[in-house]
Figure (tube, helix red, strand yellow):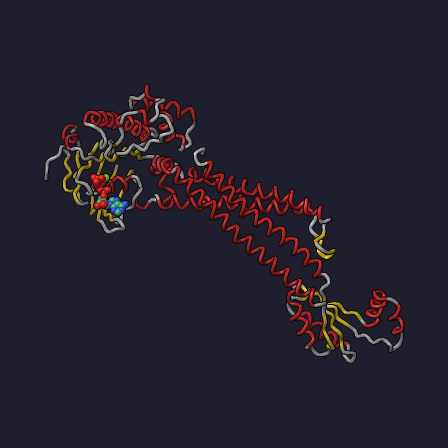
Length: 227
Length: 282
Ligand SMILES: Nc1ncnc2c1ncn2[C@@H]1O[C@H](COP(=O)(O)OP(=O)(O)OP(=O)(O)O)[C@@H](O)[C@H]1O
Ligand SMILES: [Mg+2]
């Protein structure tokens, strides 16, 4: 479970990115976070993966107080959080399967286990026939599927995605959502930041709307209605 | 790894140059310090005692001298023993002074010093004490030489210390660049939860290797160069007073120090670089 209680965050330049945000996200939920540019969506993601620390308030993720996490405890915490970004952040010198394996190798898992898991992941993200291709030989949608595969390879309980469809056309975006739904159906909590109102209205889910660092709407029914 | 080979190579080279200069300073300072020890052995203060001084006054004076800082030993030698030494050193002409009441010498204290650079001050301090006729020591040239050697030795060590800092700095910069080259990789490692040591260790190893190879070059130069020099000069420098240290085990120590500096500076420099990087990204 993810819980934000009165979370405030401002950056050194004085921008108030989040103002007294309170949220609860249950295990196994799939939620969207939407809002205009600069409304603090990415800041929520950065706080969730431990990159930024809130100024005040409490952020609990599976009973871990993320805000007061010691620097050296962050890696262990992150193993429970898969991350996907708009830019794919794949290593260009590694093939698709090597990119996915990389995420498991740096955790020191045994080779045999890694090989088995990489096959499972490739199957899940439907890239078996591209296993030996390099990232620059793939389309944007395929690359994003690789990063999703890499993010969930270690079976994190939570998958957070910051505009995963930001660079993709509508058809490819639907593929990505479908994949995220599949992952969600397997029990992973999915938190997805997006700009794409069309997508939000098509695949209706709980939607949290931010504006200037405030939660202005939290619709359980889903869909976006202009406020 | 292959991509920044040129970078690593150039940093190995800069470390090698820094360590080469360190090596020269070390060899110089080490030899000079053994020159000094040779000369120092002759550095004693001779304190002539007033004949009217009685046994109690003599004990008092000995205690007083021993209390001065920098004195390693005080030995009494009576005038008969002094005369015998003189006869032994310079021949029978002094035999005429042998016998009752003809000995013109004084009883003396032979004072040895721990720190030869203090010889001037200590001598004048002793000569002012009660019951002392005069206090003398070896020639001025010896004294200046000792002073000079001591500054060469200290200067050499300061220089080596500065070069160690330079080596750390050079390696830190190399590793910083290496981190820049691989920052995508590191970012992903951090994203998926790699431990900090997992990310740091390869860079520390790289720094260690850089330091190791940086030390290898000056060590080889040192081993071959010094041995050749030693043979060419027959083991002495200018005069018999300056005996060069024999290559074995001296060169082992020098190379040991070079490798130690190289490896430690390498590991420390890259530890600094990667720790800084990991610090400012959480
Ligand atoms: N590292 C930073 N330093 C200073 N200000 C920042 C930093 N990151 C974000 N901000 C500011 O904080 C506010 C919220 O930023 P954030 O990235 O969370 O917005 P966002 O909702 O993700 O926007 P977008 O839709 O454009 O991605 C913005 O005004 C932004 O300029
Ligand atoms: Mg953003």
